Amino acid sequence: MKNLVVLTGAGISQESGIKTFRDADGLWNNYRIEEVASPEAWDRDPQLVLDFYNLRRKQLYEVEPNSAHFALADLEALFKVQIITQNVDDLHERAGSTNVLHLHGELKKVRSTVDPDLIYNLDGWELKLGDLCEKGSQLRPHIVWFGESVPNIMMATSIVRHADIFLVIGTSLKVYPAAGLMQYVPSRVPKYLIDPEAEPQYYIHNLTIIKEKATTGVRSFISSYFC
Image (cartoon, rainbow, N blue to C red):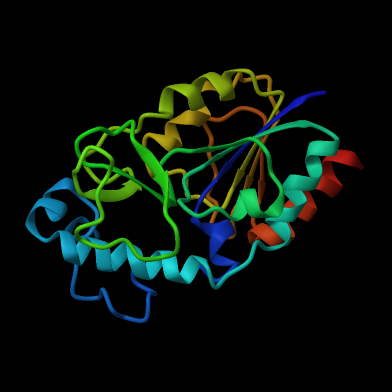
């Protein structure tokens, strides 16, 4: 089987109803994202950070995977599919994808503040001050915050180097280091970029741009690849 490597961003989740930072009912309009998603924010006001992620987590329990998520899962019958996602939701897994690498963490998981290797599945949507790990320290969201390194980027780089097909869905390719993964895909490999706001990427060889949203764009990719 050929290796189909897929990089997904916010665009695929938005179609399931996942709201962006500014769209979240206006609750966070008076904050910069760094004020709720950085180590400094956690040190300054951990309750604010917990409130932000609790609301995001609560919303995640209210949405479902969309047809793009299911289509990618179905492609495992034809390809060895590896999904690299910038999203912190679990919609790929819930749709049935079995190989998913999260670059920026996972919303339904929490981890120790003294030992980053102590990672737990959170029971329910709410993480509270006073919820402790087995070593007695406060639990925090298992999210890569601004200013923190991206632990899985080296693994992602290795994956894209071995791609036979590279598919990008719902991302502007402007958020690094994820955007830099395209540079590691061999030039001979066919590449597809699905995004309604996609712009020409003149430095990328063998790139087909599909200016559609994720749900229709994945169908267009499948049709064009197999026709």
